[in-house]
Image (cartoon, rainbow, N blue to C red):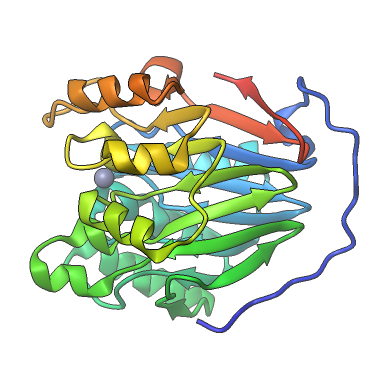
Amino acid sequence: MKRVCVFLCAMFLALLYVVPVTAHAGLEVHFLDVGQGDCTVVLCDGKAMVIDGGPREASGYVYDYIRKTLSLNHIDYVISTHPHTDHVYGLSAVLNAVPADLVLTPVLEWDSKPFEYMAKYARKQGSPMVVPSAGDTFRLGSAEITVLHCWPEAVEYGRANDASIVVRIDYGKTSFIITGDAEDWSEYMMIDSGMKLDADVLRVAHHGSSTASTMEFLRAVSPEYAVISVGKVNDYGHPHRGTLERLNRAGCDILRTDKSGTIVMVSNGERIGIVRS
Ligand SMILES: [Zn+2]
């Protein structure tokens, strides 16, 4: 992907910890409670990025959150981390209603109705679908987004989760990593890449599965907060007990959408606050 740079006049607003969710000041990262799936909305300086859209059951909630709660009628970037239904379904609802400048995805084709619908609505909106590369950077307002990982070939190994686009968000001195469902192979690749992994917030990969969040990766990221997006009732035993133990050993505060509902974090570039959990 070409390096995309969008320069804005940054408005340095005094960001308080108890800022209304709709104020759109500083950086906001919304981890939506979509049950067993994943959807994250990132807002900065009037720009918006939606990372995954949750499963079918949550698509109405995701649509309402984006259209009504956040009043978004334009999205700068949509990231479909990988084509599994619990991440991609709600994106078709979003793209059916809201145009996006660009849709980043590790694959351009996938044999499933939810993915085909997402691609159909992206076409309808005139939103190009692009496969990024690790190391690509672009701006979301005054936040810098770095693609840490995108491995389309993982699909050929039967490891579609490891195709996941993983992004790093830097805003001032604060940072977030959003991992999709990237598993241990991806984590070792990111460590080997030498890219900066240290971050304040880790959106824990693959709903807290045992196949991700290796101790080596957690040491490299060293997060203060670990956010797990997971359904109250799920067939997979997520989050895995061993993963929770490793997160505890890594010394991070664990936040879970199945316990807290939608979690919103705000950053003023210096500190991160939890607005609602
Ligand atoms: Zn998933």
